[in-house]
Amino acid sequence: MKKSLTKLEGLDRRWIYLIIFIAVLVPFITRLDLPVGRHSPSTTAIYDYIEELPPGSIIAIAFDYGPSAMPELEPAVRAMVRHAFERDHRIFAMTIHPQGALMIRRVLYPLAEEYGKQAGVDYINAGFKPGGVAVILGMGRDIVRVFEDTDARGQRLSSMPMMQDLRTYDDIAILVDLAANTLPLAWVAYAHEQYRVQIGAAVTAVVATDLYTFWKSGQLVGLINGLKGAAEYEDLVSHPGWGVQGMSSQSIAHVLIILLIVLGNISYFASRRRAQA
Figure 1 (cartoon, rainbow, N blue to C red):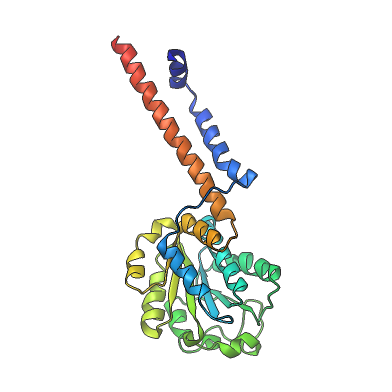
Figure 2: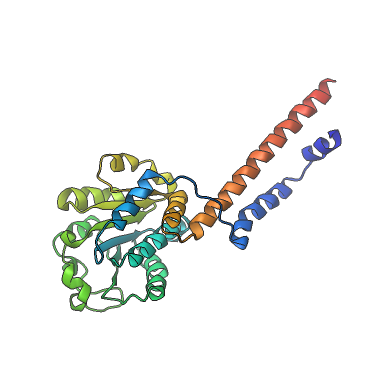
């Protein structure tokens, strides 16, 4: 036992890095899906709201994030788009983030093809529109005008069947903003407070603590908190993916790190005892 502890003290830290790397990688290779556990009430709130909407409802999704936040937010929006399509809802996708247009294409087009949904009828990709608050306010007056009657592919919005039922926020059942910052607060301040549209949010974990107050106050329908929230939503829609696998990876890595800390402390105190002997 003493020899083992001595070897542990002299262990090259690069072996620890390798062990952690393998622990993180294994769930993605083996498709290991550990139990998600109890779902957060804030995640369940968005799921329940969309679940209870009548078929054909219009859900607006603002892809206000870029590639740096993709690991946390893309699993959440994929699960949400699946949920909407399975419930036969229609999706209006847009962004006021310069990199958000790519995020829309990565998620919306493959899933629309998988579910046999038709552009202009079941979903619309309005793409990126610069202007920030001006865009948010303008959508409350005339969505077609704000986007200059053009979608992301250059097609006329006003000629699309779905736009016959979509002119302002009054026609949107819920707008969900995905962001790596506090941009959802702008949607709350200018879309919810002025036009009373229901707002949901999915944000990176580091931002979530700033938004829980707005969920508790009723200004947000619900809040998806980082990768954990994404895993919960995937579990709710019975489509485990990157979110569940990512949380499995984190869980294994966290257990391993705790184990290494315990072994390190045992080795430290054992070495002190030998030195005092």
